[in-house]
Length: 251
Image (cartoon, rainbow, N blue to C red):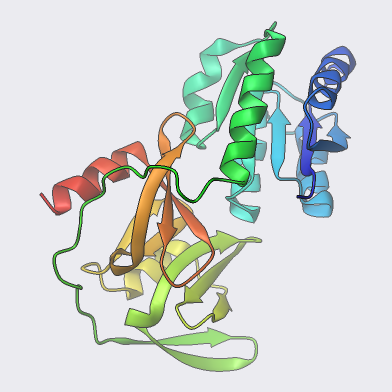
């Protein structure tokens, strides 16, 4: 198993040193970069492709929350962990689906526990007990085809074949059950407007899922869950509020 790549963003040199030492204590993690402000953090995420980013909230250039929003649009699967002395920003942090929020000065055991949980998220045991999710009694039907414009021309997609739509590298990417991957310049909202709402569900600001392809749902962070989908290897996220909405849809 490859080491998990970690990036630290904090304008305090002493705090970055503390975090580096904590990360070094846990087997299987590798520090790939350090950023001293929000703008440098975004640049390093693009260059280094970390799997975990530690973010201070109050940084020059862009705040940790502003940087987190941009990082999510680049790759929503990156685990965001806020490490800050200011607990009043906790609500803002969880609006960008932070995996955890550590308040300085934090205990070593607390940070190590968070890293262990993050490792479980990145390399989950597939036999873990799933959360109960609303079973669809019959497949929901849609016969519409989608005309997808891209730089190589036009592709026609059968909507039942679409499993997942997500934001990725600041673009909208469509995954189909036959292994297809299609990139479009349309926003997620524009793509959502063209999909059948009886079949497709906006589970998260970065994900749209085909309800007929839900395999199971398991916890992720405090207020978010992971959706595993049949037919593709990519997972999606669903917020706590959207999970409750999903339950109401099938109750």
